Length: 302
Image 1 (cartoon, rainbow, N blue to C red):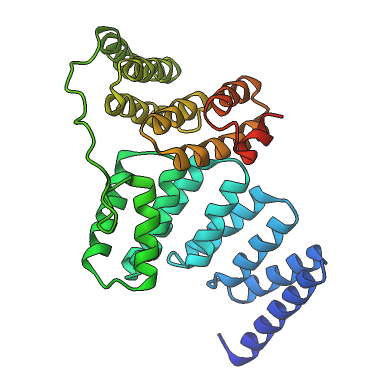
Image 2: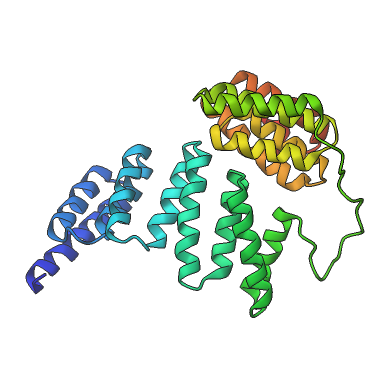
């Protein structure tokens, strides 16, 4: 890029920033598009367009602009973070979790382990998966083995809160060993049917059966097996409200009340966006039983 073109590029960006600051969003988009035309290999104009589009409430267009910015700068953490947050604003937690996964990979590659741990924790809170749980457990081990600065300690505490690992400074009281009883016959049969449905391509029926199996396992007191069934259902229907209510109930069974509350809050926003009356009623029954004194959750059910 010649000096003259670079000066025109900077001027176009400046006009865009000034217009956006004054609320003249259409003019800002024109200026940013001009800058993008002058420097087609640069991510900043597209990142600026995306931020402006979000302010205009045009989130789908913003996602497209973030994608272009990331294509030009795949390791731009600002673009990756903003894209994940946009998915979250739109009530699309599974896609937000995937976007946070990508951000965590970039942070970890750059040696920013506390940031990567926090980002993976957010992804796990949005959408449970074995891979995410294994990832955050590995990051926790690496952070514990590394320098214990303020950032590392804070990330460890937040991750331990989600994973319920035993924190070295505050060991938990011994707990009873998990049940080693066999899988209940009804749950085993339902799981077999679910696998058959999955193999035949009937994902909707597979999801229903995996959730039924999780409920049967929970009723039998087999919370680990119930959570495994939920993981299988997540692979089929990551945004299903009924599934996330069952997972919240399992968290409550394990004493993970803070994590359960956060999941229910996210689910509350999702059912509000989608108008899912049945999902809201199911969520509110759990709130009435376990979180009646939590004003954040009670407000969902007014």
